[in-house]
Image (cartoon, rainbow, N blue to C red; front, side, top):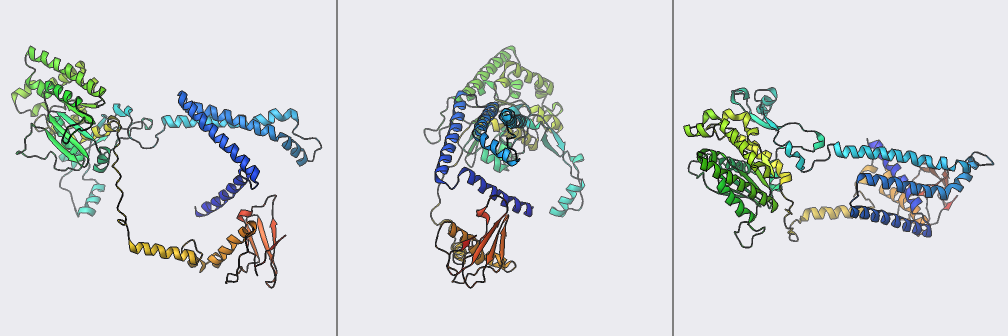
Length: 569
């Protein structure tokens, strides 16, 4: 790899010099003329791109068409202006009195290369376009098209007695054997189903750091019953508050909650009935976008709304209650739509799976068993509540596989809600509105990052480079112990002698002790320089160049002595 890098870098350097000589030659008039042409060409392409963008027709197809058309046009101009020179040189090269490139062969000869090149560009463009559409692409925030995949997943048993886990536990904790395994205790992890790479849906577990960055200067509001409260607490745990939602009988359950993590404000508003949720949504929509006074509530960046179980349990027994509840759902649907029109995304949480056998009372077993709740979920969909939301978090999907762990028939262990919160957090990539969440830049005070010792060290290294003519801060002297020719004094002579000659600068005085290398000939690529003389008088340099061109930029010339200008042969 080192050899390839060295060879390719030197070759690229030479090609760069050749290209510079062609486009910007040493002749001032020609160089200025080429600069004007380059400026006109670049400005013309910028103007063309701006015009296409203004007309709304800027696409990969149009870029391909313009590139091929402009390339053919430029090729036609170059061929037309240089054909006579090529025609004469071709006949001279083959030793023919009449050129092989006759005028009749000009169209066929001149148009074949651009046709081939255009075909290659077309094929590459089609391949590039296909890859950009169907390829995986770089990792970016999830697009809105991932909404149909984000709820697709399953609970996977977590191994605990396999060799990999045993080796890790032995090295980290000194455990020599296991007493329990996942097959006995039911340890699981949530995972998403595989998606096509073209969908760009790479669902991942968001840790606390990435979540804090995503929710910086954001406000999230949860509204609903205990299911919404558990999701609220699961999001807090994902942000690093490990004690959120811990079991504590002294804390009230049916009340509002608030939490602030860094610059993120997360609220929970207890509102299990749909008629109460209508008022909550109206209040949120009427809030100002920015606080006009301290402590004033503002519009949240996302509303997570859920409910249904309490309605089915307490206000769905008579015909009047059913009609009132249906009217409340219609009003709730309108308020969700109004919030979305105001720029507030709303996520609807479908009630989780009910463990009918674990329900604690006869009333619950009669009204909110899984069969009744499944009908109630369909009823909400019929009225249009989930369809009005920006996103639907499907509770049965991430609880169906853990229903046996529901200890009271409704609620689940904290790890289950963690899966629901991760689904919601991944969906925030496209749910959260665009907003400048960067912190205000506060410059550091002068001297805050100062380190006198490091400063002195850098000054010492700089002085070594200046006074010892070593751009590598003295390390070249260490290398010269093994390769004497790379000592800074020899490299200095090689580098600047030719430059002084070409720019007609005063010759370098080597009387200070810098001597020419004893090598009689120095070779660089296809150019060789012979030293003629015995050192008693002026040194004469003879340059031998193989080929038709001389690459003076890459020639290492070692010549001058006694302050005289060398004679070039």
